[in-house]
Image (cartoon, rainbow, N blue to C red; front, side):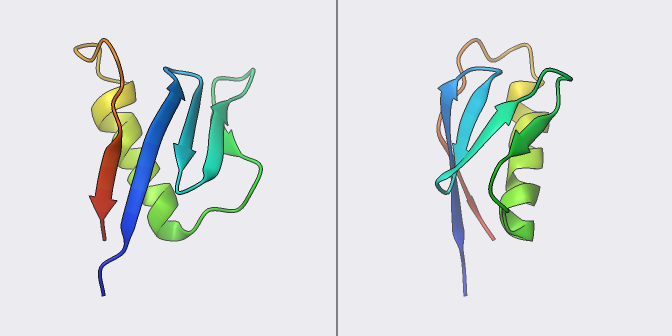
Length: 68
């Protein structure tokens, strides 16, 4: 069974939505969520962070869908 995980940027480098969970950057520079995300959601966000957020070639961040 395939599960889709959708990541939507609200404010580049500050706040993102991962399947409805709000992930934001804290004062220490870490991305955290106030609600618990599943292992797959957390893994998808880490991939998105590595490929999009940390990539200086991306001027604006876009919506991404990961299938697990």
